[in-house]
Amino acid sequence: MKKYLIQKNPFVVPTTDGKLIEEHHGIPTTGNKDISIAHMVAPPKWSEPFQTPEFEEYTYVISGKKQFIIEGETIILEAGQSIKIDANTRVQYSNPFDEACDYISICKPAFDFNKVHREEN
Image (cartoon, rainbow, N blue to C red; front, side, top):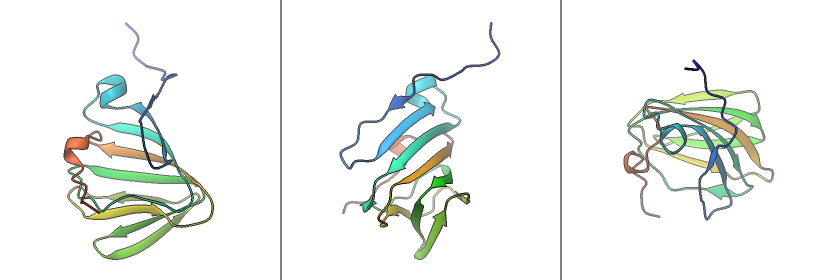
């Protein structure tokens, strides 16, 4: 039995807002409930509703910029920067800028739509 798994076919999460989500490891791809790792591209002017997830989320920005509103504080990450947001923290993710934001997201435990708790717009 192999002691590793090379992911060649990430799960592309269907979206309606133009955001690309390629989940490499997590519940839909490998059945792993402990962690999820996804490559994402948020298009210019993209945003999603506030949420209070039951998992930690780490973000590493590869290119572009990404805006976070965390418990009322606005933070902007640029390429080469990363952030960890604790579980049960109210946050809004967005890209209000004119260029796409390419980034990696890691959730621990794994991202789960039933545990993200998105607010209504």
